[in-house]
Image (tube, rainbow, N blue to C red):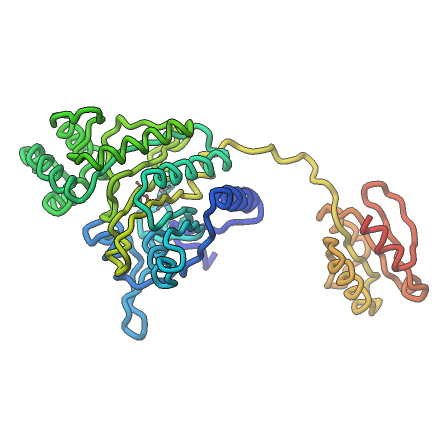
Length: 428
Ligand code: ATP
Ligand code: MG
């Protein structure tokens, strides 16, 4: 084969797309039920959009962006994530003025130049939602609930929600100091990346792909003084952030959304503040995160908009499909459907046959025909393979009498009907 898909990119054939379409329609239904409106943004964006939001020292920006300079010298990337583009669109289309609080959802391909492996692709797909323009903890509750609800609707029933609060910027600064102090004696044991980000963003050690780094960070956090009423956390939460976090926990309980707030973790992207969460599935292997998200209270302002809070999530569609329990087993014999228009070979009846096929399609009937002048026998064989219900034979006799001979492939009976009666019979 001279041409193949690139590593980490996949074709989706008709039999894969059955599950995709079902997922997409579940996401649309549920997102709309919560009052989210769809937004589609381009796949290409200005590189600066992600440098400024996701953060210069993240894996995404440092190693994973497909980045190129176009002929005009513009620094362009294939979008690696959906939040920054949605916030850009929110401001670009003045939703901060016309709507203030906007609830948006999206679905589409994302690109990251990662090492391809099970559950990790270079072109993958996400659906996600962003609620922009409110600092209320109830927005966080809604976002997490929406995330879980869509996953349930997609057949992911056994996932666990990890919940934590990363606090505000001040809390993060105080926490960083503590964590740095505890980790300094172990600095040499950390991976190269973590050593490099030690001073700039120490919390990334908690989100490192190297289990060794994560274990050291976990130990360090456990050795920190516990804050009353809070699970172990490296973030030194102020009163307002504790109250915010408690309302989120209370709200999830009110909505019967199970969560686990005992894990020490952080989200790696720069824009997160306060609530963060990850949804993990026991059905997946090493890459067990199906969805993740959280609050980002400074991004809108950093993009030149008003100082308003926001919260969102993204789910990896390929992983959701892997984590979903298999739905209805494929029916043994697909029900017969539609019409195959057959004409005797060398009959010069193509224009009439094509006209008949179009009349059928226009009335809503799935219709196929042969364009290669094959024998009637091969046409019948193909009609059978395609699971057609009816073969409509259009020969010279039929043409002359303005009729069509129809053979029911299921029942086997054959009759000749005037054209209009035939169309009516097929409709019925
Ligand atoms: P991971 O820890 O697996 O690298 P991440 O933190 O980089 O995930 P996010 O940026 O939070 O991922 O993206 C949200 C979701 O998108 C993930 O939970 C996952 O389901 C999916 N995802 C992320 N990267 C990939 C990828 N390369 N291939 C397939 N799915 C992905
Ligand atoms: Mg990643």
